[in-house]
Length: 205
Image 1 (cartoon, rainbow, N blue to C red):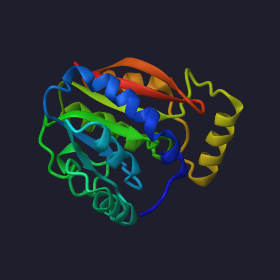
Image 2 (image 1 turned 90 degrees about the vertical axis):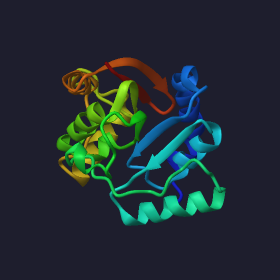
Image 3 (image 1 turned 30 degrees about the vertical axis):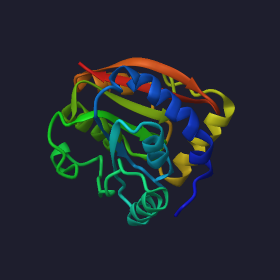
Image 4 (image 1 turned 180 degrees about the vertical axis):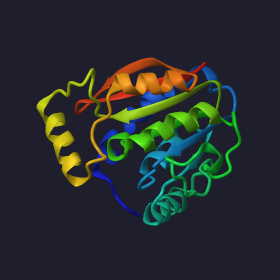
């Protein structure tokens, strides 16, 4: 079981945002996909808080999938499926066999800033196909707005990420908004979160 201090800190706040955006549908069984599930801490926490959602965790790394499996075993949650390998930069048809219009909600937590533009593009293209009408894509992390990064801690983070990998860095909300629109979604809400992060909620039109 891998441990992410960031996931430990933000899982309660993220669960509260998810509960808020999904509350109107909590009377029915929902299906959710998590892209880049990492350690698995988030998905088991969400499963405990939202028993009406069945979650499909995914990650590109085997060590992460093993950790997710360990968290599922340790918490005995019943609504988290076996983790699958999923590379969001690939066409949606390769997304672990998920059919078109099969998801009510897709989440990507602290994924976009560690991804190339082609992966970010893939997240929106795939979500546009796999989400049901009125389905939601929620992304979380630090962002640039109109090419500007604030506060200074996020500027430093962006620089550090780009030094680690020139393809990484804080994505721009306006670019994401356009990507969403081009794939049949619109940015519905932008929620300020602790530590200079935001939740972006996109709805499939």
